[in-house]
Length: 474
Image 1: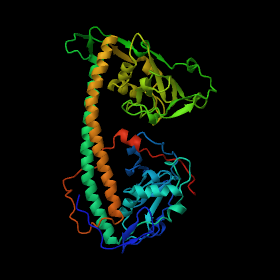
Image 2: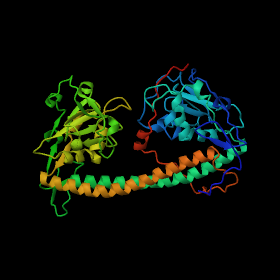
Image 3: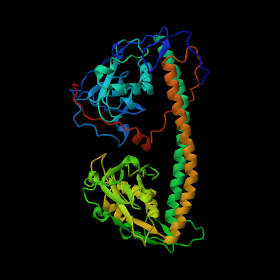
């Protein structure tokens, strides 16, 4: 944003993640700058529940949507948070689940609540310190746990970590500069996200139109007899899905025994993308996945039945499965196309239509946040069905048109990634004193009234913050 300048003189901090700092800066331990706020909500006076999302920060619990764990019904064990406190998930701090609170509220005991010891120190500056990726990664060595992204960082070790501490006036100058630049960057990101959203909507409309009306402009139409479907090509049929697919195939057909050590593809939910791509890199022995997981074979179609995955199109045609058979999460519904009725790829496209998702979401049952689509809904969903040769033509047109949309969407996402990378690098350089922003003219931001990036459902799934209940006294 500006030509970088450095401070006139530096000293070695002795801390690998931030290295040299301006010679007049201090490098105290975190525990001498912050103390842990240990107010509990035992009298239930605070009713606003908060959460912390990766790379987003502290938000009201209701804004996170239907991702992550459900909050406890008993919030008397929760910790109280005040404006200006920094909140960190002790399990997820190393992946960015940390942020500055603007609210008075309460949250799970899994969080650390840090409040400045001195009123002069600016919490906003130290919020930026916690945003630095190299700082987050440096905490891995302190963690307890098996999974690298789910390590609990003990407070007694966290408070011993050294952090850069400029004079108070420089803290404020750094915050003002980064806040202004961040507004500009977020505005650009938001505009790119709007473009991506519009392109996805246009792509979805193209798929819906092709699946319900075909791709031949000279087609004659007839009434489908289904209210939401309207008119369809006169030579098409309308059928319930159960007439053209097999449901829940038996694993006995695979020829495996439950004790087999043969390796097969394993697909947890995260190995299926929102655009139907599958990651077949995870292999497990059959004996490990025989019980408790969903069985499928190559060319089957899988649909996520749990919200919000179903609503956001988690599903795939397994024509690229790298083993003849496989297993996956128990949250899949498996459909197998009847050979004489429908191609697997066409069947998958039917499950990606807007109306399939809307009606499926309306038919969900179960507790809030853990609702599921029933097999009965899928079996009885009415679908328009062209002859198989026309299915091939529709698949080809959708593939060609989708590729054009996907190229532009991918370019926009790459630009967003570059902007985010630049922002994180800038934060690191300014907060650790590699850039001197004193006296720099700030970017004009008066006209930026809504610069926060869109928190769409796909983004929230990617930044889900788990809130396991831990002992409040730990």
